Image (cartoon, rainbow, N blue to C red; front, side, top):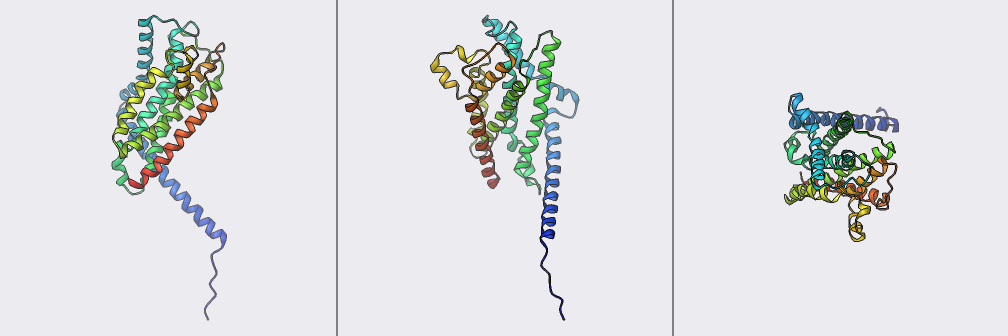
Length: 274
């Protein structure tokens, strides 16, 4: 006489699903970790010199900005320290630019890894995003620390707003990097446009000027530039005496969210064809 077969209990199914999810998560975590190590070695080399050189290069942007301002002879719109004023514009630009470029090149630089079993396009982007979090944090510390060591008086009025603006610039870099990086997989002109946008935003994102000082027609155009909004937000947070009628947090947050969602959608589409 055969024994009656018992259907698996709900507890058993739940346990099996949990173990499967845990195993998959562990596998992806190992893949991301391996890709992170590969990214670090590719970008900075195996020695400390390459790593340090990659971190101090952003100081070159600040030096160029200071040199341009000195040649033009334009007075600082806020405060009396030109270097500090330019730092509040250059720092969010650097964080956006470096994140944007690195994430944009994720698939191109790591495409051979997709032939290995268990490696997914999301793993590549996740690894690059983690690396950019670390490098962006170190860049901020180096730029701010260098100015402090050179004797510049750094007094941040609103630390929370200051950090929020830096996080927003990083998120914007992730978002635009995803959009142009996935677009470039299907049309190489996407990489060209992604590289051109850097110099354009350098000129029109408020690094050297305050948006409130511009004519209304120009301000109404720049208000849709999220990086210009971020730079203005950071200056509002840094300078206690500065208030801006240009800054619109609703437009800024909506712009970043829209670009990020577009990038995530394009990643999911690209995943089906790579």
